[in-house]
Amino acid sequence: MDEQRLRVSDAERAAVVEILGQATSDGRLTLDEYSERAASAYAAKTRADLAGLTDDLPIGQEIKPIDPRGYAVAPAPVRGEIVPAGEKLAAIFGSDTRRGAFAVPERVEATATFGEIKIELQDAHLTHQYTVIEATVIFGSVTIYVPEGIDVRLTGRAVFGAKTSKLSGGVPPGAPVLEVRATVWFGEVTVRPPKSGWLDRLGLT
Image 1 (cartoon, rainbow, N blue to C red):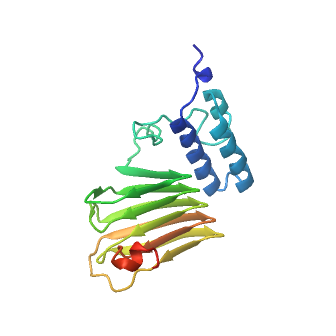
Image 2 (tube, rainbow, N blue to C red):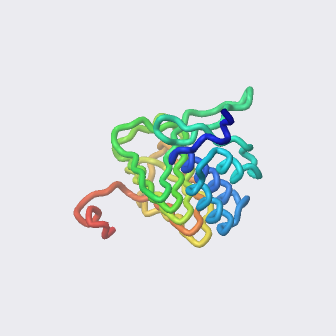
């Protein structure tokens, strides 16, 4: 049976929309092109329908495979390439939250497309001296809650959006470094202290 005629799942559609969102943040697609292709992805019925939406992008013609959690799996590394351990979070027309006592990998990718992502680090453990969070937002938001004692560096760009740090206070010498690389289109990336108090629970701070 021709695999291109196989019907696709919601997870495969979401993976293609994630690819399109990354291409838009890289400047390869305009917002109008992204909107048109994303709508086609959600309406796609077969693998051939999806492949046609990405065949002019540098990721190649094949759709990224899906792991059991529904995230797009990274392509196989080039021989000799050093690939650090990492984690991917994605919110497409929805929300995703990472919290609890988890080990933070060296690299985290958070992509919010018409969605919201929250990363709460107050109970987490940074496993490396230098950690990078790649926050890509297209009509959405990424909020990162960072406790005291971490040297946060917010870099990147915001187009019709904002990247903001609400942290205050000094950082001790030798503190672990967290670089937040923001790419924002019509949205926001915010770094702030952990939630506390009733004002936060009501969303008033």
